[in-house]
Length: 252
Image (cartoon, rainbow, N blue to C red; front, side, top):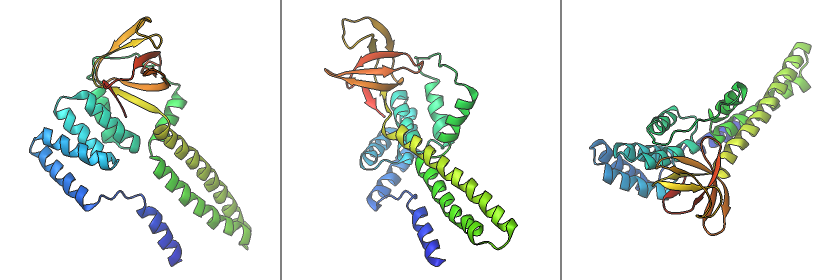
């Protein structure tokens, strides 16, 4: 029993983000600069920390700092980086929506079917690590209640064991699917944020038809990388266009 508890404790501890001492000190200094409203120095320190470790708290603080500096594009960039790591965080989601509501570019976003929208919200309510952890716990309960079903001496106990093990088996499968979807959203979906106004085109050529101008802060999904520095992108309204891959955009 003690070995099992120790094993579970190791799993739980593996989900706790820890900073090395030098990064802890830098974060404290950055926090102090932010509190004293020295946002430029705070941003510089947070950027240095973010270059060393991908952490939602650092990206969130960096987003707050740039928002105080009235730099919406970089605020959105860092809120999105934080949101990718912890999509269940309501503060990150709220600040991201607040910044996006202040952008010059506003799109008519297609409404999803209620069930699809609800399912997406459910998946995003936990990070892939958390879904994986729930799956591990469910897997343990499968064996516990499976033992009741196989080795139980009473019919009622065996029925309860069978029913519960079946439920936890389904929960385990669902959690693994949700964890995979969340992981794919982070690892495979490429997204960029516009830092300076850019022009979109109907094809990967400056001589092609111009689609529309996009201003700083707008987020785009990268659908395809083309030769000669062109990207096929999907805009928030699900329409496609092409942009040049320049320093005026930055990957989330």
